[in-house]
Amino acid sequence: MITHFVNGQSWTAGAARVGEVFDPATGVVQTHVDLASAADVDTVVAAAAKAAPAWRQTSLAKRTQVLFAMREIVNARRDELAALITAEHGKVLSDAAGEVQRGLEIIEYACGIPTLLRGGFSEGVSTGVDTWSIRQPLGVVAVISPFNFPAMVPLWFVPIAIACGNTVVLKPSEKDPSASVRLAEWFTEAGLPDGVFNVVHGDKEAVDALLDHPDVRAVSFVGSTPIARYVYERGTAAGKRVQALGGAKNHMVVLPDADLDLAADAAVSAGFGSAGERCMAISVVVAVGTVGDDLVGRIASRIGDIRTGDGRRPGCEMGPLVTGAHRDKVVSYVSAGQSAGATVVVDGRSVVPDGPAEGFWLGPTLLDHVRPGMSVYTDEIFGPVLSVVRVDSYEEALELVNGNPYGNGTAIFTNDGGAARRFQYEVEVGMVGVNVPIPVPMAYYSFGGWKASLFGDSHAHGAEGVHFFTRGKVVTSRWLDPSHGGVTLGFPTHT
Image (cartoon, rainbow, N blue to C red; front, top):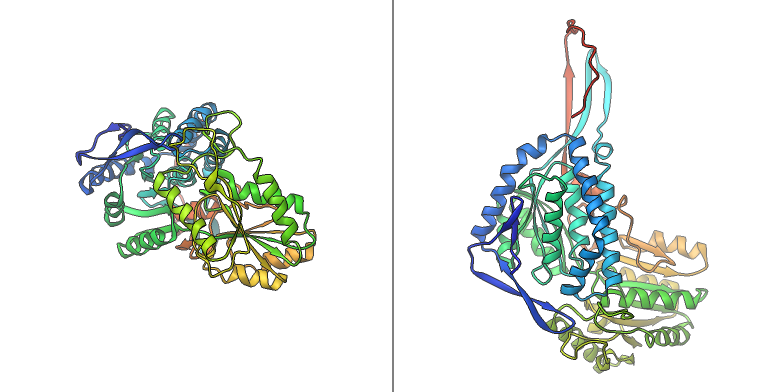
């Protein structure tokens, strides 16, 4: 049984409700997870609230020491964390290791919090008057994270929130909850005081309790657009600061002058990595002009080399989907696209996996001649399905991307610098790649989209993350001439 983590230790809630945690490669329930009631959430938030005053007063030097220690623990045990992710999510070990590495980069960024929280100072703004700015923590903040990145997404928010002086309640996905508990245990080992970082498992009841709780000052969320909108509206109605990152339908535009081998490699990697279960996956390839037949052929030839199977087995490159229900939903989109007239070039429904037949398998799937009105194009599928839409011109491709309700990420493949520069200026999305299929920024830049891919004003991590987890204050001061305070020869300390 996977339990909550509160006040530095495992804690079993009183709700007596549990959820099933599957091994996606075998289809077998491997354990259960404790699901919290609203009353249980109250208990967890109370622990975070109790710890908040002391943690806020903890020096930046001490907070940084904890983060550096956590960095060393995660770095030394990354394989252990990756194995947990693979066991519950299903992604292959190499992909899980990459997730841990990207999360580690956020911890490293948060280690610089003394510089990131540095304010401004203006001397003599008036006679004998000085003014300066500071940023202070919010208090208790909540993080609600999705199943597709059970370590990385919590690490987008938790290290920065803690470094800024807040206490945190994390509600991870109940589908793969173990990674979050392991991170909480490691933070405690790194020296984080009890109650500063807590994990509560649950479903909608726990989410609503966090959104409504008066002691929770801010909420960070990643998930589908309908739920992101719900979290934003309910959270802000309760007076909270909310950043809710929603879904995506990421396009990759391939111009006639592009290196088609490079584009085909990128489309396969970005479309089928992590079985397509990531918000930055490329799900639509926009073939411009005459490149369609050649590009589709190159993509199809590469798909044949992908080995689908248990992510713990050597040589497997794409694992199962997270649950049987989700696999069946993705399959229904493939069938709907075929019925609507799309050409199934590679059919993942007939994949023979390197793993038990009972696993939640769907192989890489390629659809050609997809039209914008088809559900396979309009909806976020969140699976290994790559659609090819053919257009005649750059202008038509741009119109297609900008007309989509999502605005998370996009990419353009071309050898024309002028076309690339024009595209990055004109396209209406939050993250753009030029000959880079998954333009996920480094930790010191912020992650987030536009339009229906983001609700709220702040993106994740980077400078925007620091601003989200703090609030600004400006102090204006006038003092009389100082009196002599005596002499001290001791070395100044900063503890």
